Image 1: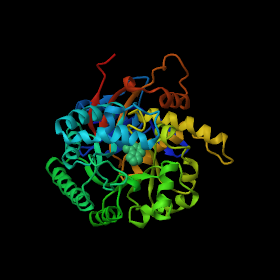
Image 2: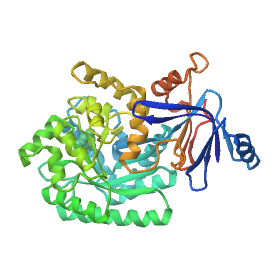
Image 3: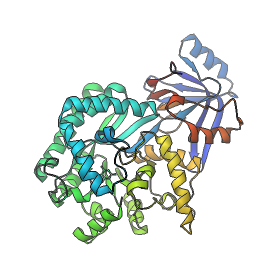
Image 4: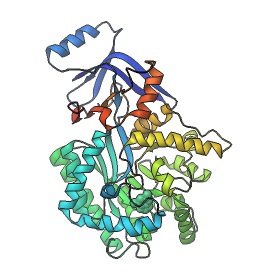
Length: 437
Ligand SMILES: O=c1[nH]c(=O)c2nc[nH]c2[nH]1
C-alpha cells in the first residue's frame, strides 16, 4: 500500500515535523519501507506504479496521516464503569466498585462482550497498541487476547496477580501466592501458543496489581518469572499518598524501592502514574530503564498531584501516556494529551522549574514515548517503522489558518472519534469510518 498526502510525526520531544505531499510506501509485512517526498526524482514513477497496482491511498485535502498511539496503561475489565464513581478516593473506589466489577470476568461471555466493545472503541480513537491489565482470571485474559488478535490491535496483556488477604476481598483474589504464580505462568504459556497459532502481535506481561495487593512471595515470584521468560512488567507505582505510605509502613522503603527489591523494575517495566515519585525514585527509574505511564485524567482524581513529566524527561526516564480506564473516564489518548497539557499548567503555577507541556511534547509521549517504553518500532512515520497509522481530518480546515503548526495544534486539541477516518496496525486496516457523517 502507498499513502499519498501530508503527515505529522514527532522529530523530538519538542518538535513535531510536518511533511507535505509525500508517498508513504508500506511493504507486505506492514513496515514503512520508504517515504518519497515530492522533490524526489522518482515520485511520479512510484505514484504511477502504485496506481497501476491499485494500491494508492490518497489522503483527502484537510486530512493528515499521523502515527497510531500507544495507550500505556489501561484496565480492560473496568471499561463498563468508565466515568463512574470518580468522586471517591482510590481505596474506596477499588473496594466498592472496581473489585466487584472485575470479579464478574469469571463469566467468559461477559468478558467477550466487554472486550469487543473496548477494543473497537480504542481502535476508533487511534490507539494502535495497548498495554492492558486484565483481571485475575486466566481464561478471561485469553479472551481479551483473542479479541485483540481478531480485531487487529497490538496488545500487551497481563493476568493481574493479587493475593494479599489484608488488601484484597475474599471474592476477588488469587487464593495463594502459589496460585498467583502458577496462573501467571499458565497464562504466559497459553499466550505463547495463541501467538503461534494466530500470528497476532500479542505479548504477555507480568502484572502485580500494586505493592499493597501482593504478598512478598508473589512479588518475588513475579520478578523471577519476568526474568525467566524475559517479559515486560507492569504495575502501579507511587500513584497516591496512600500507596506511598503503605510501602513505607510495610517495608520501610519507598514504593519504587520495594518494586526494585523484587526484581520488578527493569528496562521492560512500565509503571503507571508516579505522581509521588521523588528525585531519587526518578534516578532509580533511570538506572533501571523503567518507563512511566503518565495518566493525567486519572491523576486528577486519584493522584494527589501532577506527575512531573519534565523532570522525568530531563532525567532520561522513558514516558508515555495512558488512559487508565477507568481511573480515567476517557478511552481517548487525544483527551489525555489535552489533559496532560492542562495539568502541566497547574504544576507550573506551584513549581520553580519548567513544567508546562506543549502540544508537541504530548504528541511525542503518545507516539514515540509509548513505543519506546514497549520496545516497539512504532510511533513514527519513517522508513523501518511499523505502519501504525491514523488518517485524521482537521474539522476546522475550511475556517481557519492553514499554517502547519496551527493545524497540528488543532489536531491535538480538537480531534475526536468522528474525525479519525481510518486506522491501520502494521499496514492492516483495523478501523474505517469514512461512511459515517
Ligand atoms: O488507578 C488505579 N486503578 C486500579 O485499578 C488500581 N489498582 C491498584 N491501584 C490502582 N489504581
